[in-house]
Length: 64
Image 1 (tube, rainbow, N blue to C red):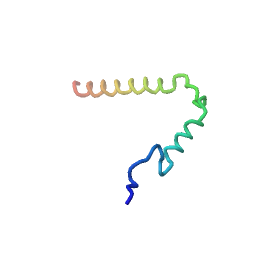
Image 2: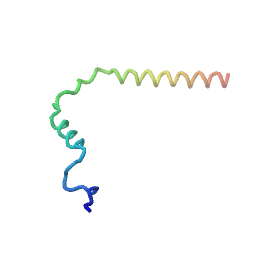
Image 3: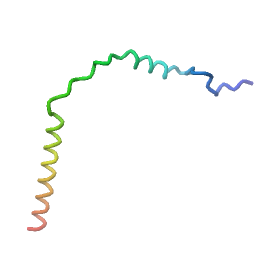
Image 4: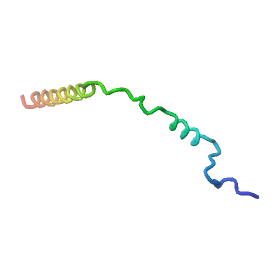
């Protein structure tokens, strides 16, 4: 009886790996969106400022 569970060569029985590689190879390289001018950076700065304000308010309430 033959052992059919061992891989033979590079054959993928489902074909998913080979199809994925073909898809990646065909994808154009220049499809990335241009970076926005400070969108995520502004959100990060506002988040840090809000966090500092919350910590300062809690400290003020705890000490006052």
